[in-house]
Image (cartoon, rainbow, N blue to C red; front, top):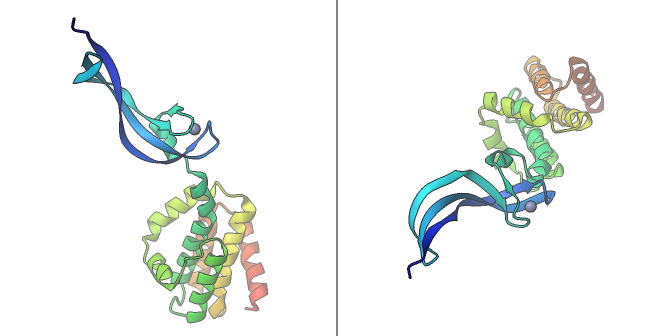
Length: 204
Ligand SMILES: [Zn+2]
């Protein structure tokens, strides 16, 4: 007696970490796809058509999700976001002034380290200064909406303080602070207020 039939076999295409809505946290996932097999004695022998689309399966709760779920930032990525936005804001403002100024660079590195990125150093700052800022600005504008207004103001404040390390703000530096403030979703009034507070505390 030969027993034959069809069976769906799932293949793992890739693995990673995602934010599982059911578990409510970062979990390992498998990106999978099913395929029909012709089976003989319950053993898949001939691959047939693919069934449906790919999906993401949580390793912990085995919940299944559409691939779109991978675009939701993980908790770990969200935790890094303020420090990343701060890095990008500072690099843009520093580049619009005298970015070779040792004290300003030192201040920039210290501020980013204190914001939660302890491995940040002068080499990483140099790399940040060379980034394509047109692209960075698009990302910043997208990401900043996830932060509270106070957090966005404090990012601009830190960038203004770095710019003020080597003396009063140049026209260029002021222009960049306005642009960064706008990317951070702050109004003109908020930007002016934050920059004037930074001026007062720096004495310039
Ligand atoms: Zn889960």
